[in-house]
Length: 264
Image (cartoon, rainbow, N blue to C red; front, side, top):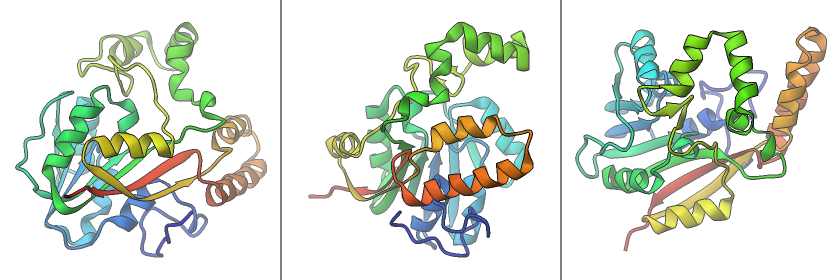
């Protein structure tokens, strides 16, 4: 972990002051007092809300999920959060935003090229783009986000048992936003990225990586273990300490990128 986390960071607590996640990383690298910030794939607006204290003139969030946007409007009616259909151009002028976040979103997107081209267009020349993605590493195969693609029948049975058949059909079969859960129906895979792949992809479309950071190594097997310890609060507390230590010591499960435009 290279990023220093300040005590003012709203995404940490006294228990995990030195634990880096995508929100705490992004918050640290967004400069205060900017003209405008865009959170692409803002979900329910929680991260955007945390930027209010940064003194940024305008905060904007967009998301392809109409359900997520509806939830954001209920939680934070004062925020400018919009529904943006998949593969749509961003409705903003060139070089408008001084900072942009793309937090655990790129791995869900089918048209990654079109998205990166659009983000570069609306980012100011001296602006910063912050991207977080799942890292490609030895435990990537344990990603539960791909369970629905690896074992569709098992996933359908489990989801219908926990929720309902109607909700399953709406979320995974006939989603009006063109998604399978939260992943593009045209992509149908929760992608993982190495540092080399990220540098290459971003470099092709006019970006340069200024800083790589990350967290965790055993997070996926530890997460599976944690789901089996719900019966014991004392064991869960020990488990939480181990997870926090894993996030501090290693940089493989989550990959965080601080990015600038590659200018001539």
